[in-house]
Image (cartoon, rainbow, N blue to C red; front, top):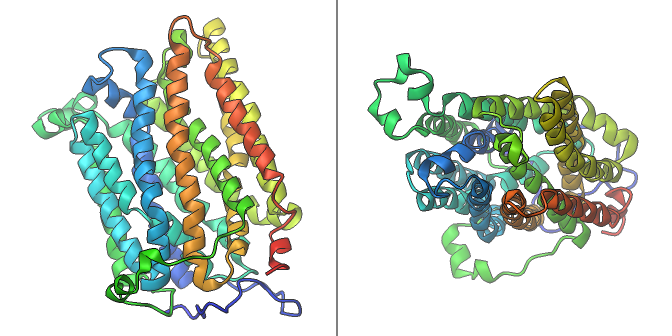
Length: 458
C-alpha cells in the first residue's frame, strides 16, 4: 500500500521550512497508473474517425448531410450527460472504499460499452452504449486523485509531465484503429470479405480491439495496482451511514469555473473538428475520408503528448500554472479563425500545400490548449482542504467539466449543421466558438498567479 496519511487533518501543501528537494516519482505504481489511463482516450478516440460515416449508415439523417453534425453532437454528449450525474459520487466513494474498486468498475463498464457500440445498428442503441460507459466511468477523476495520493508538492508537476503519455498513445492509436479498421470487409476484402459478422457489424472490429485492451488493463489493475487510500470503509457501512447525504468541502470556485469553460471550448472544438474534416468543401468542410481523418487526429495526439512530456514541467517552473493556462485558452481564438481560412483556401486552390500548412498550424496551436488541463489540476489540488477530500474535490471539478462536455459537443455540432443549411450564415459556428473562447479567457483571469497563493490561505 502506498504510504500516505489520509486523515482529514493532513494538509496537501508544503509548509514553510520544509525541504524543497524534489521527491522521486514512485515508478513501481506510477507506470501502472499511466498504463490504465490509456484506456479512456483509446476507446473514445477509436470512435471519432468513423462516427460521421456511422451516422450516415444507420440512416437517422435520411440522407440530409447537414444533419450529420447534429446527431454526432447528440451522440457524444450522451456519454457526458450520464457522466455528469455520477462522476462526483464515484469520486467521493473512492475517498471511502478506495480508488482501486472504482477504477475496476470503470474499466469493466468501458469494455462493455465499446462492445455494445460496435454491435449497435440504431441511433438509440448507440446512445445507450455510451450512456452505460458514461454512468460507470469514474476512472479519469479517480486516477487523477491517485496520482495526487502518491505524489507531493515537489514532484506533482513532474508527474503531470508524464500524464500526457497515455493520452498521446490513446489519441494516436485510437484514430488509427478506428479510421483504418472500420468497414473492414469493404476495405480489406481479401482478409475480411468472407466474414458475415463484420459485414453485418462493419464497426465491430475497431470497437472490439479497444474493448480487448481495456480488458487487459482491468487484469493489470486487479493484480498489480496497489490501493492508495489507507483508511477504507465498507460499502454497506457507508449506505447505513447515509453516504449519499453527506456534506463535502467545496473547492474554490475559480478552479471549477475554469475547468467548465476550458472543457466547454475544448469539447466544442473537438466535436466540430472531425465533422469539419468530413463535410464537403462546398458545404464548408474539407471532404476528407475516415482514414485520413484518423491519421490527422493521431498526429495531433502524438504531438500533444510529446510536447507536454518534454516541456510542461520546464514551462511550469519558469512561467507558472496560470500563465500556461491563460496562453492555452487564448490560443482558442486563432484556432477558430483558421476554420474558415482552411475552407476558403480549399475552395480557391483545392487541397494543396496552403491548406495542409493551415491545418498543421491549427493543430499545433491545440498543444497550448491541451496544456491547460495539468495546470488546472494543480489548482484543483490546492483547492482541496485536505488529503481525505481529494477524491471529492476532483469529482466536483470533473462534474463541472463533464457538464461542459454535454453542452459543448451537442451545441457546437448542431450550430455547425445549422450554419451549413441554405440561407444561414456559414460563419455562425465560428462566432459561437469564438464567444466560448473569449469566455474561457475572461474566466482564466480569476485564477491567482500561482496555486501557492491558495496554499497560503489554507
